Image (cartoon, rainbow, N blue to C red):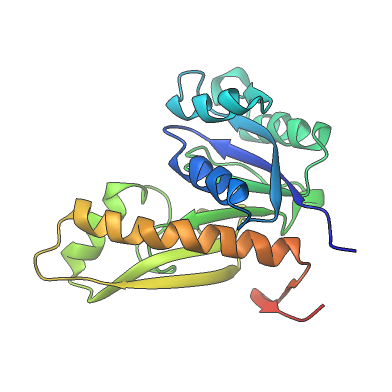
Length: 209
C-alpha cells in the first residue's frame, strides 16, 4: 500500500510564498504531503490568507508572548505535537527556535544561498543576494537543510545552483534562486515522506526503501 501523505506544520512570518508553493505542489499531486497546521510569528502575516482560504488551522505564536526563547520554542512545538505532525517546515520563518529532542531531524528550512556561504544570523531575504553579488560569486543557489539550534547550520539535505550574471541585481538573482527553491523544497519533503533520508555525522544520506 502507498504510504500516507506526510503530515506537515508550516511556520511563516510574512507573505507565505513558500507555503503557497507547497500547497500548489500538493494540489498538483507533486508533493506527497498534507498541511495540518500553519503557525505564524505575526498576527499580521499576509501569508495567513493561504491556509484560511483552504480551511487549514492557523495559530499565532509571537515571541513577545513568551518569557524566554526556550519557552517560546516549547509553545510553538506544542502546537505541532497537538496537530500530530511528522515534519515541521519553515517557510520564511524569521524567529530563532530551539529544537526539542523529539523533533530532531524533523524540522526543515530552505536558505537562498549555498550553505555554508552567505548564511547565519542576519542573512535573510535580499541581504543574502546582496552579499553574494558583493563577493563576486559566479554561482549561487539554495539549500534545504534540517534545522538545529544554530542559524543555517543543520545537516544539508540538498542544494540547487543557478548562474550569477554580470548584470544581476539582488532582485534578479533572488528571482532565479526562488525558481529553484520552488523545486528543491518539495523534492526534499518527498524524500522525507518516502522515508529515504538518514543522518549520520552531519551527512544526510538518501537510501532505498
